[in-house]
Every structure is written in structure tokens, then in C-alpha cells.
Length: 331
Ligand SMILES: Nc1ncnc2c1ncn2[C@@H]1O[C@H](COP(=O)(O)OP(=O)(O)OP(=O)(O)O)[C@@H](O)[C@H]1O
Image (cartoon, rainbow, N blue to C red; front, side, top):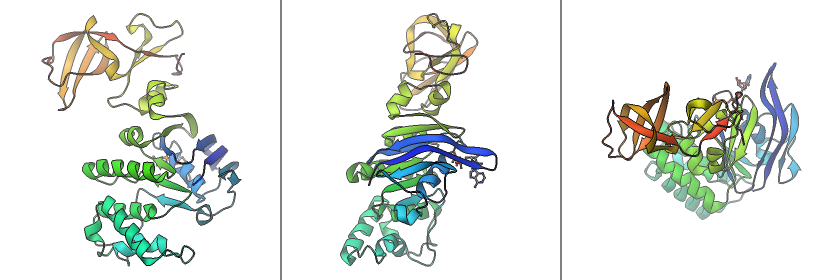
């Protein structure tokens, strides 16, 4: 494994710029998650690193060496796509051992068996090893695709929404397992998702893409606590950050046009009165939907709150973030 570096990478399709001068370092052993809405350039970034596609300008380096013109095999990358791609005429076991049976690798039979059994266990498909790949559910096929990447030791794993077709329970299990595998093995991952829980829980670094530009790159907490813009702030946090006019609460700097308040940064019990519009009990957490000076706000409160719709509650901001009229963060 090695540092993977993108340097001023630009990619156009016709006159549409899919990636605009992106520079990014994926440190050896890191788990980098790319976040952004559809069309932001996440998959294109992955394809540039994989060698499936070539940048129009800019360079890509693996371990300090340019990989210009190198195929995915020469780059030694392992890819998992949103949609499984298995060999239908092979069993699950044969699919999983396929990458290890390359004549170049000369992996001994018992090592192949050990690896395949271990990965099958992690992915909860041990009981299906002798099934044909086509005799599986969609979620099982996707697990085999992930497994086929994980049996390898590539320079970098490239994963494009690998968990999106799985049900919630399996998704949560695999999130933990993928993170464990990466942390233990020191593997380097570049991972695309729309799911911010995946991003927050697995990433060592998050890259936020906006219309082909990398607008922020940093640790999940850093992006969460110090977003560079409203756009970046809204990519993390569930419920979403509240964005309200700067004069809603006193104390905003003169250039501020908006205040950003994370739901947990609205203190209750003192301050000004807000109207409770709705109380959402989620079990471990209760969300309050408030109306305050014509703004809708969402905050979190005690799971056993007695508040109900129509009540009033005093609120004040804690750790407000300020943004200018263009949505850029003010220091
Ligand atoms: N082969 C292609 N031909 C033409 N346009 C393309 C091609 N691949 C991507 N694009 C365009 O480039 C832009 C970035 O696409 P990309 O697939 O990287 O977005 P994304 O962030 O991965 O989105 P999604 O979350 O929907 O997968 C989009 O506007 C897309 O339509």
C-alpha cells in the first residue's frame, strides 16, 4: 500500500467539467470517504484512481510514482461497485478465490482456503459458499463482490456505494466490519457514499465534492465542527444543521448573513421562547421541531421529555457558526 495522490486532476465529458482541478492526498492506511450529491464527481474520482478512465489534465501518483497510462491491473487496485459483478457460472467459493488464483500470485491452497473462509465469515455468507453465484439474493451477491475485493491485498481499495443495496441491519454490521478490517490490516480505502453515517463512522478523512471541485478535506469531526461553507455543513449531521438569518439571535458578526446551528447546539431552558410544533420520539432520542421568529428549527432533547406540540420552550444558541451571503464560513 502507498500514498495515492491526485494533482490538479481535471476531467471533462464534452463541455461538462466532471472534475475541476482536484488535488487530494489519500494517505497510506487511510479510509477516505467522498461525499457529495449526485453528479458531484465522486465516481469520476474513483475511476481516475482506478485507471478505468484518464484525466484530461493533471497527474495521479501511487507511492510517489506516476501511474499515467497504467491499467487497473498494473495499478493493483481492487474495486467494488454499487452493483455486484460476479462470475455467474462459478460458486460463491470459486468467485471469492478467483483473485487469489492468479498464476502470478502462487498462493498456496491452504492459504486460499483460510482467507476465503475468514472473509466469508465476516460477510456472513459462509453457509452459501457452495451455492452458484446466481442462486443468491441481491444483498448476498453484493457481499460476495465485497469479499472478492477483500481477499486481495491491493495498493488501494476503491468502493462505490458498496453497502447501498443491503438492508439496514447488514449495512450496520458491515460498516463495523469494513472499518475493523481496514483498521487491522492498515489498508488504504477510497470510498464513495451518500450515507453520512457511513462517512462519520468509517472515515479517517472526508472529502466534500461540489460540482467537480473538492471544497473541503479533513477528519470527520473537523468537517462537522468546522465546515468551510453551508454546503459542507449540510453534508454531515442528522438531523441537518439549521440555517437561519443572522439577525435571528443577537451577537452575529457584521458580515454574517446566516447562522448555522447544529441541532445539539440549541440550548433549552433559557433564552427566548420558541413554539413546539412537533415532538418526534425516536426511542433513544427525541427531536423537537420548533418555530422561532418565523424560522423552523430542529433540535434534540431528552428521550423522555414531557414537551408536546403547542408548548413553548426557551432556547438559545450554543456554538453558532456564521456564514456570509455567499454561504462561506466566517472565521
Ligand atoms: N461517461 C460519461 N459521459 C458523460 N458524462 C459523464 C460520464 N461520467 C460522468 N459524467 C458526468 O460527470 C458528472 C459527475 O459524475 P459522477 O458519476 O462522477 O458523479 P457522482 O458524484 O458519482 O454521482 P452519483 O452519486 O450519482 O454516482 C455528472 O454530471 C455526470 O453526468
